[in-house]
Each structure stands twice: as C-alpha cells, then as structure tokens.
Image (cartoon, rainbow, N blue to C red):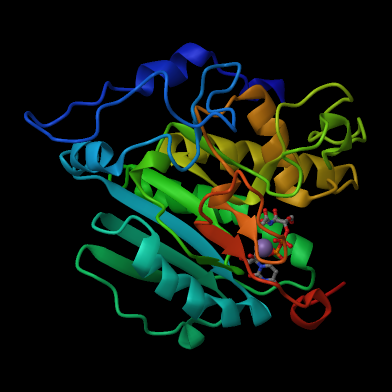
Length: 308
Ligand SMILES: CC(=O)N[C@H]1[C@@H](OP(=O)(O)OP(=O)(O)OC[C@H]2O[C@@H](n3ccc(=O)[nH]c3=O)[C@H](O)[C@@H]2O)O[C@H](CO)[C@H](O)[C@@H]1O
Ligand SMILES: [Mn+2]
C-alpha cells in the first residue's frame, strides 16, 4: 500500500498558474472579508470549496480559455437504473454548464438508458457491464472499470474526471471551482465528528486500515475526481488493494470508500469539496450549508439492492 506514496512535489508541479483574460471585471477579492463560519484551507494548504469562497465571474473565463474536457462516470446496474434519468437531467442544469462534458454510463441494461437532451458540447456514452449478486461488488468494481476507462479512452481526450453515485441529483451549481489534481468530497455524515468515530476500516489485516488517531476527514465514495492521471492512480491502487484484501478473505467496512479514504490519507487531496457537493436528502440542512449542489436521494435499500 505504501507503494502509492508519491511526493507532494509531483502533485504541485502539475499545477499551472491561472491566466486571466485582460480587463476582466469581477468583484474585488479580499483577504479580510469572507466566510468566517467554516474552514477554507486544510493544514496541508489545500482549498476547501464552500459557497462564497470562489468567484465564478473570475473562474469561468480562466477555465474557458483552456478548452477543457470533463468526463464523468456513473454506474446504473440492476434497479439503480431508475435513478439515471434524474441524474442526467439535473446534470444538464447544473454540472459544468457551458463546458465540454462527456458522461460515461455503465449499466447492465443499455436499452433502458433514458434519452436525455444534451446541450452542445455535451455527450453521453453507454458501456455494458455485467450485473452482480452483491451490491458491495457492484460498488467496489467501479474502481476497476474507471481505471480501464481512463487507460483505454480518456488519456489525451479528457483533462478531468468525476466519479459519481447515480442515486443522487444536482440541485445547484457544480463547476470549474471543483477542478484540481486530486479532488475529494467531505462526507456529509461525519464532518462535525471526531476522527475516532469515522467509519474507516479498523482491522489491521485490511490494506484499507487506518489506525486510531490517524486520518484527516471522512471522504465520500459517492463523489471524487481530479486530473485523469491522478484518478487513474487512485483507481488502480484501490482496485489492487481491494483484490489483495479479497485474497485474504477480508472486505473493507465500506468497500471502495474505505480504500479511497486510505488512499487520500497518504495522497492528500489537492482540493477538497465541502459537503455542499454531496449532501443527503434525508439530512436536515445545517447553517453552514448555504447551497446544496448534489445530494443523495432517499432510497429503500431493501427494495433496490440485490442483497441486504
Ligand atoms: C454517498 C456516498 O458516498 N455513497 C457511498 C456509500 O453508500 P451508498 O448507500 O450511497 O451506496 P449505493 O447503494 O448508492 O451504491 C453505490 C453506487 O453503486 C452503484 N450501484 C450499487 C448497487 C446496485 O445494485 N447497482 C448500482 O448501480 C450506483 O451507482 C450507486 O450509486 O458507500 C458505498 C460503499 O460501497 C459507496 O462508496 C457509495 O459511493
Ligand atoms: Mn449512493
């Protein structure tokens, strides 16, 4: 697992300074006034994105000039196909509007993929995947398929990728402020908790093990992303570690989410997205959440999953 450790220098050298169009008009920045109710930078100096920390009038022109392409992967296997229409329709309204977006749908029912009208510059591709008997397998196998997708198709064609749960909808702007080398989303369920109660994998036998007193945040398995090269590394490592665990007959507490948390503990994300970027519909709104951008729908697990 420690093979995954790469020096922070590799990540920092990826970052190119932003170039602004000349004479761009936008609100004057301040280092005095701004969000005071939340932390907007990690101890390793990665920004934490909250509403009010970025200016789309400044960011959009900077990124527009780069002619970026953003991929998104979403899996809709078995009964989860029913979530796909809302996911796709709301992505049209909120997810990287005005940019080149390529959504890859992985499903065992290609014919059931809904026809959703997409704006110019946006496209959808459907990939067939077999079904599986256990939801844990479907969820964890995403890492393997994401790695293969990046290696087979994305290098050179897409700059960034986000990997998203299908049982969710967009409700608000999700755009270029979310881009970064390695991007993690803070899980909405644990961000006020002490790390001792995070549901990390706690058995030392697993490659996803995180010891008591370790860990930064609890990140979501349902949304993560970054440069395609970074996500390839992440997916490859998590897939390999999941397999190594399987050989020892151990499955991490939250499957690929546990492996992702282990990966992000060593490979610190270069940008962190606040829980605005993955909320849950059943949770009541908290005062620091000024906007909900993406949120998991309420679902009946017993009814939609192939196993309990
Ligand atoms: C919001 C969030 O962070 N959710 C994570 C959480 O539980 P969740 O309860 O959100 O997991 P889930 O049931 O939504 O499964 C994750 C994803 O796998 C796909 N799927 C799953 C089952 C199935 O029968 N068909 C299918 O297509 C689908 O894209 C779904 O969104 O923990 C899981 C651990 O395994 C994943 O890390 C999820 O991403
Ligand atoms: Mn989910």
